[in-house]
Length: 423
Image (cartoon, rainbow, N blue to C red; front, side):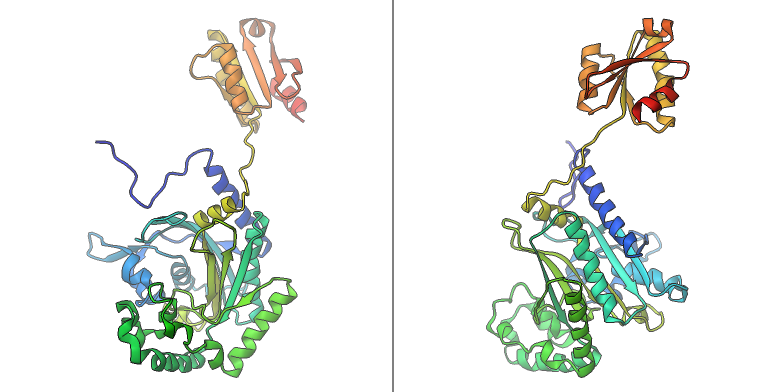
């Protein structure tokens, strides 16, 4: 019986992986311009981290985590998202004491959620994320949103929609929480079991329910914007002002709550409006989380961030018909004819690579015509032809596959001569 790949995972093969590499390089390049630095955290963490950091009322914690016991009977979980791990590392390594503040970080790596696989959604997926910790300036909220938009635009996406909301500070959320409980409680028996459980624990999460989103009470639910106190309202106005100054279009949606428990103040999503992208249009989500560092045992430290799935980004690019694969090309292909020439080609190939050239040779004992075809498939700039006669004469033929021009170069000083020719 053949062994197949687990459901909800994928092999990213040569020819496709280059697309992933370009996306990663683009995201990292944008982060460098914004002075965000890379952080790498473990793929698995203590389960308690996600119970406290993500929230025990979320679908992620309740239904989607891959949790196991190690040999020491410790409960560990494959990370379902990146923020909790970054905040844990920030706190554990006392990065709040760094000279440069706020601490601006980005990460990229595999995440794991047990959910129903569908187009652009996998059980193992790659997530890119950004976290800015240490500032309560609404300008950093706008900067984080701007960074996400810049990555998408630099990759060529045009059909984007930015949706923002404010979840307010603790007092605003408390007032809104009471209003939500009073609104839903008389008819909560009409809602799914998840919503019934959330009524007292976190009624805001009811608004994020996919099963009951068409219920009449959803349409008339109290808006968080009506319960923002003066401080929260002014903060939200500043975020909107800064986005406008940066010429970033946005829509305010008071029903946007995000799926994680740790958000407060600014929340946002970037969506694809490309035709054929699918029913789930969200590409990226993020927001502010001012109590998460304290929850991890650190000092009072505000933070804001976002994350997106690379798989969904690729789906959005495909929906807009954007091809981002870079043309692959090697510098030279060495064709060796005869045993002595083949032996010498090993040394020549090594010298070319050590000199910084991308080079290849035949390993299947093919004839000259087949080797030329192999060079063309690899899109080689030059073919280096080495035979018994060339070895005896101390010369080698170099053919430019684009122009068809062919020259002879001496073997004695070949690398220097070839470097001059390539330039």
